[in-house]
Length: 338
Image (cartoon, rainbow, N blue to C red; front, side, top):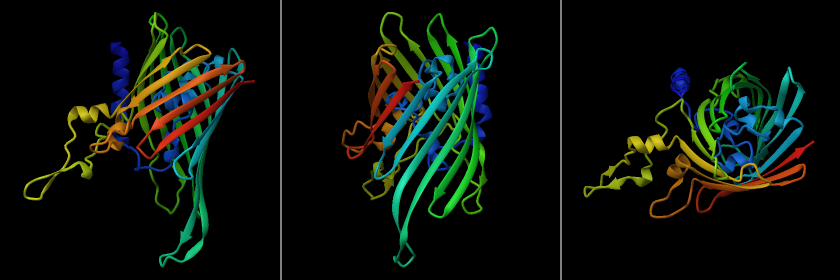
């Protein structure tokens, strides 16, 4: 355990200089959940090592032979006219070379009314982004440690502006077979823009994620604990709407405590009957809940839930994620064993 913690701390310290969170980088769609199963478990689970062919889009170390021949398709009708989705497929070449994984992720921002500075209509325009990935995992000989990598080509078109980039995901997972515990660590979206939108080079949404999950021995539950955005400690911010007004009319800014910031890195979740034909999932994302909560109103932001049903060679998955009183997201997925 001490050795695992040392490795984890090494990764965190090594990448702290690249600290980024949402809204500070390009290609933000790369951070979207890759499947309904993952969305229902909080959006960033990296420790599922089984049939789920969508999992390697977040942690390439989970690529394994059980995924071979499976095709995963995901679609999300997001907010407004935005939609995004993904497709993933795995193929085992042979026992020596093992399994390759290929994936596509995309987002379509819909159509917009173009206007000039005077408000005159200039015509409609749209925006979309897509990423193609190829992944491979390697089992370190005589150990239960698996290492993996994704290579990604990224293309983005926003109105008349275009950008092209490359990135890689580096992942590791350690399987403790005796205790049925999986430990995962991922550095996502290490890369750069090859061509920029307007001559200004921007950072990619680099993120370090760590996770642990365990399937209980006498209870049909696998619990998950995920730590997100470990490349940056301070992810909390003061919300001006939550400031307190003094008698003199001054506003005291909201204070985010040490524990308030710490919990914003935490996602907890559980999967009931994880190996059966039908299973259920539930999670709570602390950062999402804290950032989207409203004063004196219960919004249930941060809660996600879903289920999966298997029909022979088909598996249907669904998730529901709560954001605000007015906004929520449903995600559907189909996995086919070809």
